[in-house]
Length: 170
Image (cartoon, rainbow, N blue to C red; front, side):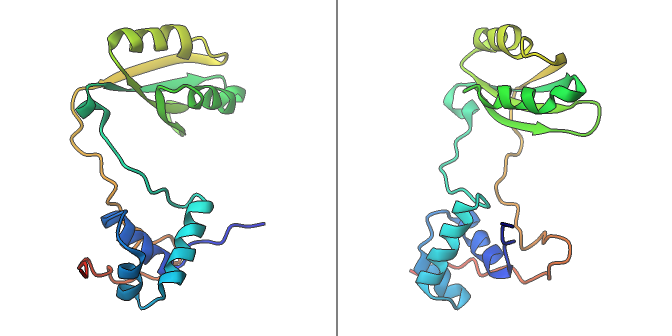
């Protein structure tokens, strides 16, 4: 069964939740001219189909951890297996298959340099199919935003709509 693509109303709901993930559905409904139940059902579907997640976000650097990006070159037929092995590691919070000089990009969160060294030498480089790695340690994050808007950047073929109201009714 093909997943239903988010429509303009879904994108407007997502825009509201990106501004404030705890915004009441009644406020969103009022701003968009929908029923509260309609907003609740749409949000539930968006979560169930993994279009959105509603979570608290923290920066590991602010919590005393270190972050690093590992770029990997792997044997061509092992990309999926290497990506799955990386994703299974608790210190890995992001994995992407890439086009270009690197096959996989992974972000790591470690307590300290010792944990990073152990992870790289004894876990990442030992995954079958890994040919080469390059690691960059994040010293400071200049931008890490979740404010990208599906309304400002609609998918190809979707009509561009005005940005929803940002006023919160109290």
